[in-house]
Length: 407
Ligand code: ADP
Ligand code: MG
Image 1 (cartoon, rainbow, N blue to C red):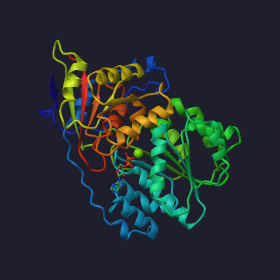
Image 2: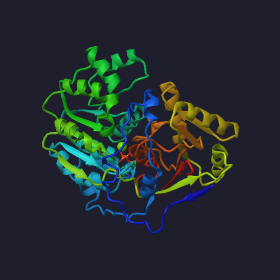
Image 3: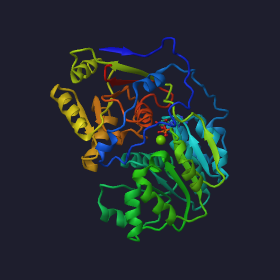
Image 4: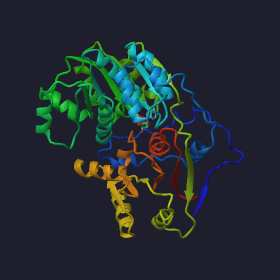
């Protein structure tokens, strides 16, 4: 095995526009159609460019949360969480969001986008009824966002619910009749509840679409449009992601009204806290054996391994388990209960590896993920950026390895 980081003469910062126009755009709704998704290929050369060292852009917050206009109770909760200063996206979006402006926020993976939208919502909710809806592309991410909201509203008598697929519908129907300050949902289940008239958006004041480029993508388009049609016209709209797809500008303009645009990262570069390496197999190397060998390194103690298909995920999981490695898997064929349990065990440090499809690529925040490994080269640059962004979060560093076919 040899790793390559291409720090040679090409070590010049790539212009952000390189990948934009010919970025492959397969169907990516995560619910099958794997065949279509497998038709396009990401060029390893583009990954080499991603892996080039870049000048780190260091941000110095201009205030502590303690000196911010936030409510004293919120300040106290932030302190309990160990959030002393805002991250760049949090600082730069706060004023506009408190003033009720629409916003497009592009900032790197792990840069605190969740609190960037939750804090102004909470501030407005402390002042009076101010119902908000957050849409997320995956169930686990929806659960995580609601957990973050709960950790920031202790003692404030605010109520939240999560509505995601793969869970008991009757329970959701009961929950939906209760007054709720924050709804976090994946589009399918939310629409289902709306169409059964279990839920109403009459009092909704804020819409957040987290990982919006994913949700504006084909797989979600129909459900999302129906949800948008059901919302009050007068509302604040917030779109957040680490990546931006230029072809979605028209759709973005339809949703946002005179927005503030904050583009803290270029939207097509990966997080510079992540050291990125490509792995070329030598003739005769067997990939799974190389992977097992890598996992003997004691520093690889919290590793997310991405594979392209559900079947590959299961296969890698099985092989690693046979080798006595503590692993589990997450993909669309597993029950929601199983998926959430596997993720929780991984979060709790009970597993060395979590093997996953792209269902775990977006938004999932696990402390101290040491490594991300792409067992196969991902199909799109967006997918790559979000996967490697599962490590190197909140200013920490991480390492990402990608297996590439030898040429
Ligand atoms: P993003 O959505 O940009 O990928 P998250 O919102 O998931 O990032 O936040 C990444 C991590 O940073 C989380 O573990 C979160 O708790 C932490 N975090 C967020 N804001 C702050 C802050 N102001 N200070 C310290 N840690 C923070
Ligand atoms: Mg996020």
